Amino acid sequence: MLSTLPDYILYILAVVVSAVVSLYAVKKIIFIARKRKIYDIPDNIRKIHGEEIPSLGGIGVFIGYIATIPYFIQHAGIGWEVIITSTVILFFTGIYDDLMNMRPSKKLLAQFIASFIAVKFADMRIISLYGFMGVDILPYWVSVGLTTFCCTFFINVFNFIDGIDGLAGMLAILYCGVLGLLFIQTGHSMEACISFSLLGATIGLLYYNYSPAKIYMGDTGSMLSGFTIFILSIFYVRFMCTTPTAIKASSAFMLALSILFYPVFDAVRVFILRAKNGISPLKADRRHLHYYLLDSGMSHAATSWLITVVNALTIVLAALLSQTMHFGIVLLIISIPSIVLAVMAQQMQRKNKIR
Image 1 (tube, rainbow, N blue to C red):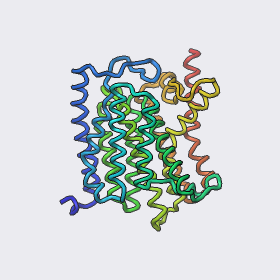
Image 2: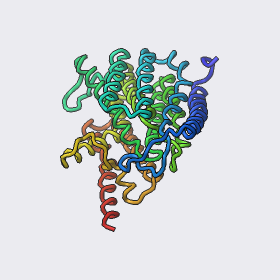
Image 3: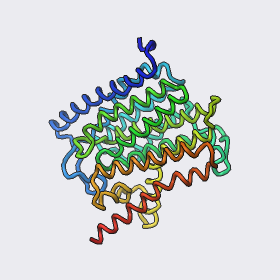
């Protein structure tokens, strides 16, 4: 029956069904968590909420996402069954961590295994750097190793931005929306539906996660979102490499990079600041840009919207410039919005401290 429907109806169904299922699931999760007193306890560093709030919202996102994608993955590109296996590994890892506080080393191992499975057995690899730093086609095992590392890294940096009400959810919606539109443009309707399924499932969570939040995404949701967004980005680049289209493969690589750019930029910036101060790069603190903006007096909602707009501007710049300008120049230009935000946030925080 679904195969007879126009693509645009499938896109709408993917968003609406996943959103409704997620919305209902998150509502029930909030009720159960409160009844059983399963809360995320504030620590005044990264967990800055003033009250006890559940952090199991990612379960609702997973339910909404999984409820809608079985049909789509049957008709999508090869390897999606393997990718869902990795997703399930991350889902149970996230639940365990949200409930029991998993040791970081064990969580990192689970993320690495899930990433390796998707990269090796679904062949979701970065096969070329398209001239970046003078590198083109990568040897197979270099490609596997680099992509596994990048996937594991992005899962973690996406988790880092899940520090305030609504931010990670809003960015996930932006990224999935852009990826969905890119897949529509290139004729990959099933991958577009998968993107829109995660978008809809995140909308269902954001209804309760927007400031003031009643529930958090948790590691379950951030790992699911970070992993899926990364894999969809790689799939888009791989498709553009193997299919004759009006968009150059290097341009597709830059577009994918622009989608992933902000969480990586913020994490690398924080790692450098911690290293300069003799602190472990993995030690939690308030050096992320969203904390700087909060400390300057901005609200959770205003901070989330500002960062989302900066991300959108980064993607728009990449889309406008990537086909006509050199890769390195485009990379420099798309960095400007995030650099300006970083300078502005730091200055605002300092002025607020002086007052």
